[in-house]
Length: 75
Image (spheres, rainbow, N blue to C red):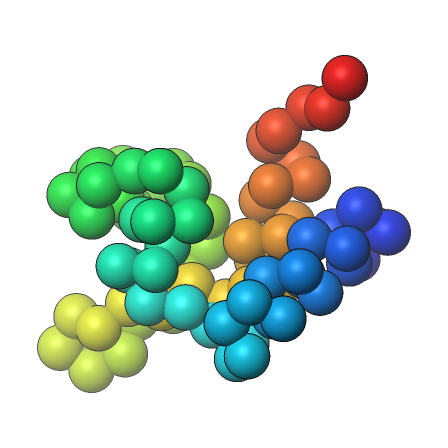
């Protein structure tokens, strides 16, 4: 994990106090609707996720931190 991703992970972990977040929390974190997250997931785009049981989806903070550092460019 890069140093930028580590900083993002640490910040997210301090906020949520766990290593994965729900769809609702992910939508709030990214500024997207839950239906947009669902559409991106079906299209194979967006952040990696874990599907549990009959459709419960969670997003590991490690994957979210990597996604942020790989897709968002800072100036």
